[in-house]
Length: 236
Image 1 (spheres, rainbow, N blue to C red):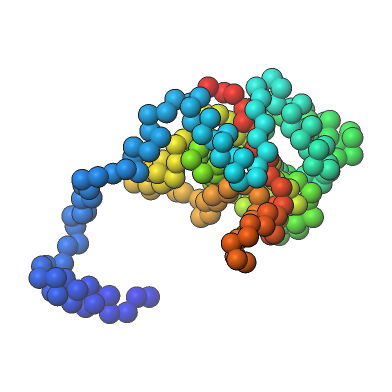
Image 2 (cartoon, one colour):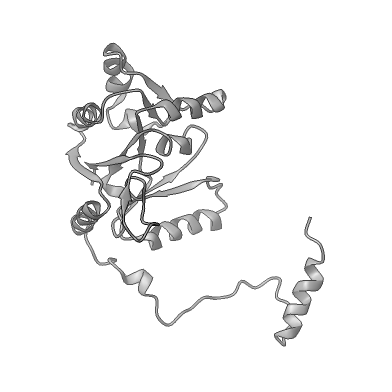
């Protein structure tokens, strides 16, 4: 419960010398909007170049592949990172991108433990993610300027999958790459204005965990995933 809200807001409006506005949404027509122009003229391939360069700066391995080769590339990356246990989202894109055979047949046959997030199991999911060697998710939006993957959490998409495992792999459809944070914020705002229910948690992940708190000396792999790989899939 909010106490004295009306009297407080009425007092603020009076001090500003105007009546309190309760119906008209303020317009934000700024003269200069550099956030809309930055990288906005770049083609998908040019954005990929920006993203590629940024990945080097954030100590993230970048792998580029096609849909046909994705399963082989993902398997090779998981092997490089030491195998399972693997924690994944309950996400239809794994099947859509041809990874069902790898996840449901090949890995179990090779004794690679795979745990899919299931909202009905509650905290068991968190425990499995915590002991996982690798967490794997898809990126919902990808920011070229900062090398950031944007994850929209949901019932089958727990945030722990990208946070608690020792390593993290993001599968990035090339079509999800946008210039920068501006486009992500605009998309979230669009969903809100359209009355859509947006996730209670939206994660912005930029490579592996790192910190420069001590005398500005960068240390990579201090909390959360100590290594991260981005697999960009050509889909546009």
